[in-house]
Amino acid sequence: MHHLVGKPSHPFAAASGGVGDPASPFYPRPYNPTPPHAHGFPIEVAPAPIERWRAGNTGIPFAWSFAATRPGPHVALVALTHGDELCGSFALDLLLREAVRPARGTLTLIFANWQAHDLWTPAAPNRAFFIDHDMNRVWRPDMLDSDADGVELRRARALRPLIDTVDMLLDIHSTQQPSPPMLLPGDAPRKARFACTLGWPGLVVQDFPGSAPGRLRDHTALGAAQGQRVGLVVECGQHWVASTGDHAVQACLRFLAHLDMLDAGFLAAHARPAPAAARHVITTHLVVARGPGAALDQAWPDIAEVTQAGTRLGHDGIEEIRTPYANAMLVLPVERPRPGLPMLRFARTVDAADAARDAC
Ligand SMILES: [Zn+2]
Picture 1 (tube, rainbow, N blue to C red):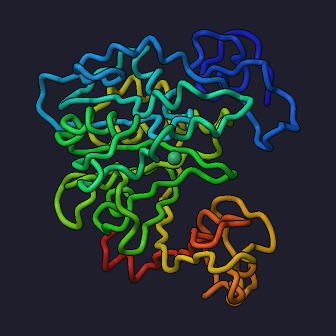
Picture 2 (cartoon, helix red, strand yellow):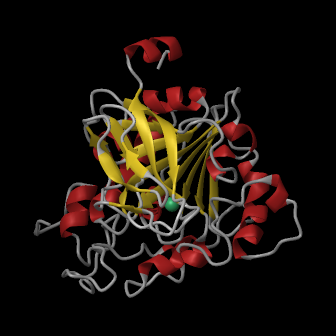
């Protein structure tokens, strides 16, 4: 990281050099600056001081909505669905501090699992992931309408009436291993096509049909195969790395700008150049650990590409794992998974013929 003197002019510069700078959209502190870290992952940032946003203005704590006079969509940016994934809270804190208001429609900003996030500590940073339930698996009627209880279910039930009126939703996440920022639209091709038009980030990973239910981005019409409402996940990079916070800011800006919600001056002041075109890949295989010996031969980043078809990657506990085709993307590989849990997904690039057919 660079060490800058004076007030940084850009969020990324702020992230790199803004230790102790209250104007920074990120909150790096010198409390854990030097690797190696006991838990094995770098921590370059401290949580944003979101307590000041507790009141909300919707009747729901940590949930803010701002309406323009000009009609338009209801757009929601959601941070902290996973309480240890800090990046989205930097972006929302920036938008709230800068009093960003929508040019049309309604803009809603939600710090979702703020209670788990409250437990975040650099000594055990993953502990804040959730308290009772993974908050990105509870958005399904058989959980929301059940008698089950828990911190995340109560929070989801409180947010549900607000979420039910959202047209376009961006749920902001980060990953354990290093990975490029990517949009995860789920399995609906229409949502992948929309994700490709955003212009940032430059990678869209579409799920194969039947992805696990209960994700916020797929709640009711936000995940339907047909329709106009869209929920997306953006993965912004590795948890607790300063650039991940910047990626979250960029994702929010691009999402709002694409929907004609954002003041041009604010966009120009904060947006960075976007990649020329999005790479659209589609998940083709899910590899699940089938026995106790399941392991990959090496650790991988959260997304990687293997050129040769048939390359051995490891063992699922019953048989070898090999790449099923050339230029296979490995998505979210887990080096030593427990039996029954996903080990990795294979994804292939959507080629020109597919793209023409899908008009992506
Ligand atoms: Zn997450």
